[in-house]
Amino acid sequence: MGPRRLLLVGEGNFSFAAALSETLDSSVCLTATCLQHPAELARDPVAQENLQRLRERGTEIRFSVDCTQLANAFEPQDREFDRIYFNFPHCGRKAGVAKNRKLLAKFFQSCVDVLAEEGEVHVALCRGQGGTSADKPQREWHNSWQVVAMAALGGLILSDVLPFRCEAVPGYKCTGYRSQDKSFHIEGALNHIFTRSLPFEGSQPRVFSIKLGDQWFSFSEPKALAGKLNRDFLEASSCHPIKIINEKLIVELGKIFPLKRLKCSFPLLPLEGTSVLPSWNCDSLSSFWINLHEYNSDSEFLHGEITKEMEDFLMSFSQLSIYKSPRRDGKEVHEGISGQAKVWLRSSLLVHVQAIIQAPDFLPGSLYILSGPVFRKCHILPFTMPAFHETLLILGFNQSLKDGCLLSLLNHLTGILDSLLTQTLPEGSMLSSSVEFVPQLNANNYVIHVKSHNFGPDCAKDLIIGSVTSSAANLTHKDQYFVFMSINLDLLAMLTWGITDWRMLWTFDNRFMKKFVPGEIEPFKSYSLYPPCYVHDISFWLKEEKGFDELEFHTMARAVSQDTIISIQFLGRFHHPKTEQVSLCYRLTYQTCDKALTQQQVASMQSQFRKEIQQQLHVIPR
Image 1: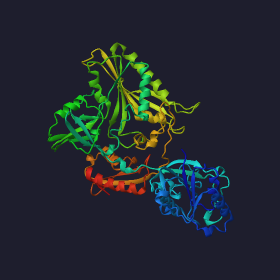
Image 2: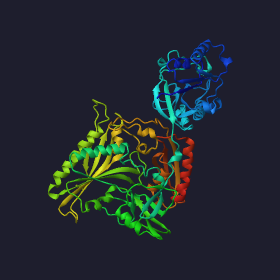
Image 3: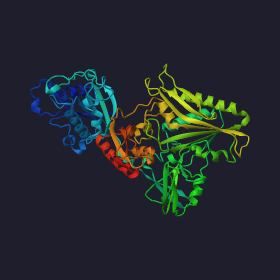
Image 4: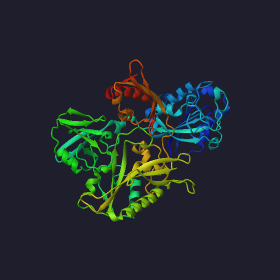
């Protein structure tokens, strides 16, 4: 269904309104406004002719409407416009970029008061004014109107950019250049389309509860993982791209191997007793630790089943008074806590392998599949994520068939992944994606390396999306050889659809899911374009150089910024010659992928980050 109510602001001679009205269906209600008083237009014959045409069509016309105070111009029952147009805004005469930015900022803030929930704001700007890379050529940021940053002040994001075509509205004459009866230079002009953004308030950590028998426990979501627990992307009812890509992968594997799909438990694990093969690095020091408390009724139930290890641990949990917290320097901190236990979020599905292969009903020759979310602390990098979904493939076979079975599995998976990654490439494209299993120092281990052009012809990406580990027999299956293959489904989905930012997979914005149609794989087009970057530097003195934990520094930045920091660059280290103190300096870049972000919000986050590192990392900000 198209827009029902349209609002035009800043009309000069009303030629755009008159031309647009001729293209509209009779069911569309058009309201055209201008800043001038009627007397100011009385001597303009073009304006008078256009006003007459509009009146004949029943268009509502309003004079003396200030586009920066739209709520004052309309009663509450007359608001809720589906589309608002502002063509070639300008403060008049030789106003500089700063004044025009201010006009845009006030306009966008005013729009929110009269815009329907799913409405659009259309702003046409001359070539280069917008300051986005859609402009050809693109102006330097400081010399542009910074239209996306100004829209963010009104909680709006740029969802589309189209060429402004006068031929689409015959008769339109854009006047008002420098407050004169002159046309703007509209060659290369662009129409910027803005929509509402989700607010940041929805990303606060939640409280979860789990039940064992008649007893309940609760815990807070780690701040660095806000909005990432309990998302159920892999559940049967889900249409999320991670679910789609996992199902496609499993269907293809099912054509080659008999399958055994396993139900994934929820991701809490006890501190002690988790059994993994020694060759795997399931580092508890990079894991997210959770404090379990006695039941909090104001919480959300955590979906999933409890592992046997977790059940045994919770059954023994009763008013624990001491737990040990590991540190990166190898020491342990003993903390006295009553009614509290410490567990961790699994960092890999590999922690479940021993329980699977030692189960009495394990069948060699069948391909066992386990899929679920995993969580780990990591540095802030473009394709490194603290939360993602993993699919684990487990295949056991007779040792005498080792080489043939392993080669067969790798060849089949190469073909499956190649097929998935080429579905969104243009037909007849000379570009391609390649999958390679690269041997590691241990000849039995591989990493799955993918080179893809799905992010664009000039943007090839080389990524590692998984690993392969093989192991000889264990006590339960003495004559068997095992292959364990781990695949990062989030990276695979990003490569398949050309999703450039992993954070987009976790958005709460419903527009994301509308981009995916069951049974079809089309290149992903973001609904938030050209988000601005904000750069801040931070430097601080270290109290103890050896005690500084850079991973915790990144994790804290992720938490305080609500995942809006996309880059942390180490700038340098300074050693004071007299005091012997050491100072470190980093550059932080803030940018969102799905929400409006303002310079004021970033400044507030940066200030909070300075306080947090001083309190938690024991450094002295400079």
